[in-house]
Length: 193
Length: 178
Image (tube, rainbow over all chains, first blue to last red; front, top):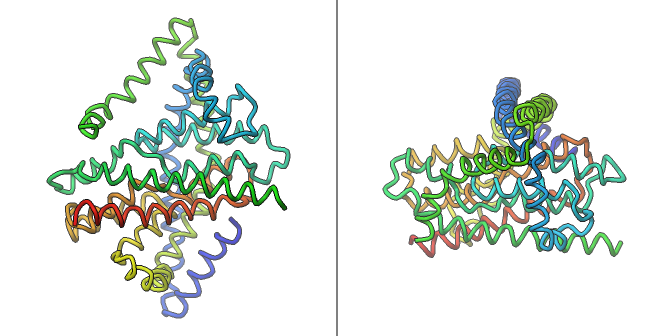
């Protein structure tokens, strides 16, 4: 992340200097920072709401039931997470919310999953394999119902806003498969070292 | 058929989920409101803790975009694009997508305004947005929230998946709509 962060900022300033537009840098930085805080404030609402509901579900024992049901599949994807660990339930909730196209509901579960995964981490500043697998699947976005997208298309005046659903399913299946395979390959390479 | 079913079901899923949670919690005699507030409090703290990470990633992306550096990056990739017959705008969209979700949505809306949502590029952009997520944002926020500084191989794997979705989107949209 250090490199990505520095690369974005340094190359940005460098290019702006060459183009003689250094003045845009400060403006871009301040506007973006404001955007970030606004985003965080609006996140307080959804995160609080969903973590509230998730906590109720957890206390009632629903997450236990679900994580037991998907345990076999997840054992294979996440061999390092012990059976019945709360991390599995959070990952499941996160992926379910993602699949349904509710990105805002997925984030709180994802963050909770990371906290749970961190409790299994022996080197707290380095990602574990389970974390990498989780992120790989998460960033490749297993969407089944792209609800926001269909709404956006409709509002832009599309004649058939949902015609892209099939294409999205195909593309998302390809990217998730690529993520799982890529993650698996990297895991094996790491073990060989 | 299936897509129609999915569309009808989509708005019902979340309310149904909440309904089931509350009914089940009642059966299990959980102190619902108390527990809800406890969880929501956690959520509040979590969102506050996120602010520094969000500011970092937004500022870096903002500088990179506004300086024009992103245009150079797109220029570098244009030979590959002509091979797979993808419009430059869509590559730009795909790069922004891996950096910032709101920015990518804004860009998609621009494409809709300029070319129409039912144009080739409008459909391709839609498919691309629908099939990937904000790789850098998720990695920064998720890892940042627990203090992980070394993401190991998750960035290359995430980008590889983004690339796969880009190629798959171009392929499937050409096949279905051209």
